[in-house]
Image 1: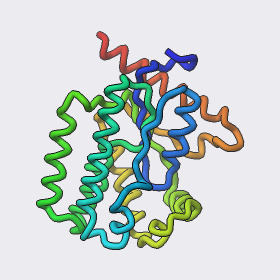
Image 2: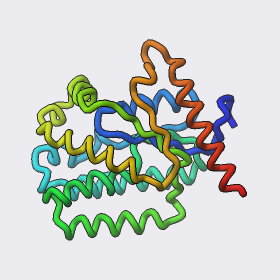
Image 3: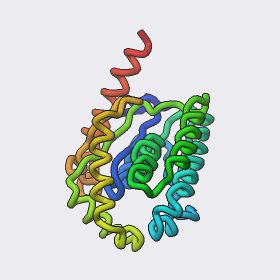
Length: 220
């Protein structure tokens, strides 16, 4: 246990739509808890720019790349034995992004089936520990759009707003059904990491409570 009462081998995953602040919270929690971080490999992604210019041509390639990178991170966390804050879960890749492209016709049914079978094969390996808790970041849709604009990634700013609206709603629907691990819902307005770092303490309290509760149940 660290001084906050959270096991040093815990894996905490942060989920939420694009622009909601997952990376910022990942860094802040890791620093506070003295945990390692696990981030998406965005800067080195060879498909991301191409994807935003042509969803249909590159959606499958992008999702396969993310899946491979995410699995490598899962293996790394397994080998270290926990103590990680993870920026975005592998579950979002398959249940939100890939499924959305399959349903809207920007990924073929054959490609989606191949992708899903690969995902299912990966999660059945011993290298795939489920998170102790998933933190779901909530906010209003307008706040997401404002954050995307502030972040300044041109490929995101130029994307049709309808895409962000659909993605936002899919996240809301997804988290209502998610049951792979315990969930803590946190509204981004509950804390302010810049002007009041101590506002993160109630979030840490929620994490500790959920982990304590579910680990106690598992030990019975």
